[in-house]
View (tube, rainbow, N blue to C red):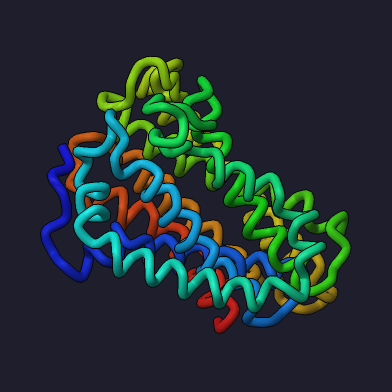
Length: 296
């Protein structure tokens, strides 16, 4: 079982949420491409928002009676001051970027903000009780997937003054939701033995084997989307020209295939870096492979 990460740099990268924030920025920049938009503000705001949101949730849980002994929370308590300063810096940067688009951002992302604020309620604010949205049976993974999907698709729309009901946004949200839900279930599988039974996570309810099958099945959706796009690009080639497959779409599909392999091989027996570095690394791998495919 996870006894903590020994390497100091990796602790900062993982426990300090920097790796996750880079993943959020990459996913947001990628979705921005599919929305036909451009710019650096949405990825930077996604990075800053991830740092601020996860720092807040760590702060809310660092003295949690059930979770306080976890390695990442113990590390957070030891390094609370610099982490809070960094989060405040990101909050300032994010606020400067967000203020000109405050109304649209609120309209697009208020559900994600509610999930973040009430995912875990600090025990000292509620008489020491352990309450929060993550305690609602079966909702934990669904809430995480919904928040990440809303942010990665909604941020580019809001910061580029695009219509939130744009036709592309719907299928992109569905694709992102299945991807993030598969990852969230994988982390619940890792924590199944430690999570209280009252939490009623998806693996606790349907069992670890079925939950892993569900995670793999969910990834078939985004994988099939990119395989279909690759096929359609070939079918639309001009007559008389040798048909070609879109390299970017094929590379993205390959990224989801790698994610399937990583999920299948995951489990509580894996070392501390397998999930926090490798599984979360799929957030970066898939868009990076897609961008690599555009160069071929």
